[in-house]
Image (cartoon, rainbow, N blue to C red; front, side, top):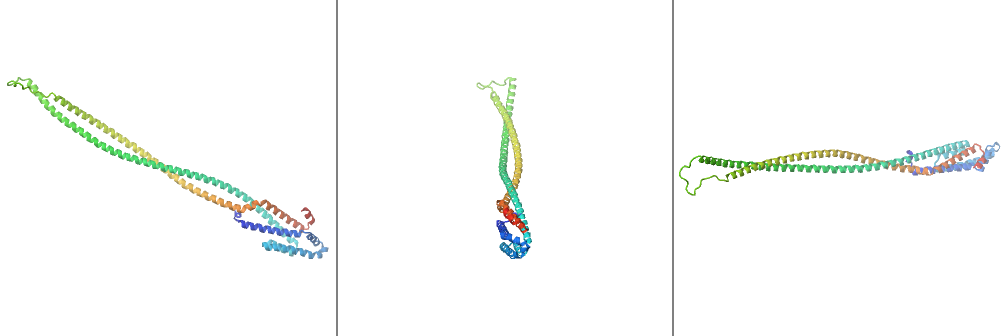
Length: 377
């Protein structure tokens, strides 16, 4: 991925330099491929004309050397500077060697550019696929966060409701206890009053019973004896016990019976009330226990959901960072690759033509038929 670190400016400077260098080579080949150069080559390899062509050959060498030197100085190209010296001082064999080296360099650049283009295609495709995958992951995490937050909110409300219900039941228990205590005190007072009433009534009944019992015994004894003394005066009747005495005692006995019945009813009511209170306490305590357990269970679920929420948010942040890095890398790829991919076919064709021209130049320098090359072109 080191290629992606190259900036647009560096890439443009490299391409400008390479284009200028190729232009210089093309001009040098043009000089070597002219009609005068063809005559010069002919005279050079004809011993009879060796002396005659020496001056013209030197002139051609000087022209090519000046051309290559100027371009080499402009581009600061050691390769062209060396070639310029070789053209001026050395035989064409050294020039051909330089051309071979240049051809090798061009082919290496071609291979590098092909490799770079393949790299760009693969990396851009991989970057796009990874970005799409991370976008889907981000969407899933956002949805999961929303679900967790909703669940946590629901659990929080449910727990608060359960706590409020428990508090209300505890209040009801307290009130029921207070009411039961009050009712029991009233019961104790009522029963005590009823029993005291019965006690008093029984005492009264006992006194009346004793009195009327003695009176009845005296009457029975008198009936068995003759009357003593003179007869009672006129208008003075015989003493008799009150006829209503039996009714009074019966009423007292009925009141005592009613009091006992009321006492029994009061005791049964108290027992029923106590049992109802105890059942209410048991049922309420069971409900409180169940709700407390529900609070514990929901609190555990909530704690787990909160932990998941923290982890999911961290995953979302990490995914967002990865998306940012993918975006940055995508921009770097486009910086490095857009020019190459856009001009790839054109640059490859131009480089092939340059290589072919260098090969033709080398063939000419090696004694090939110059006219044949011109006709083939």
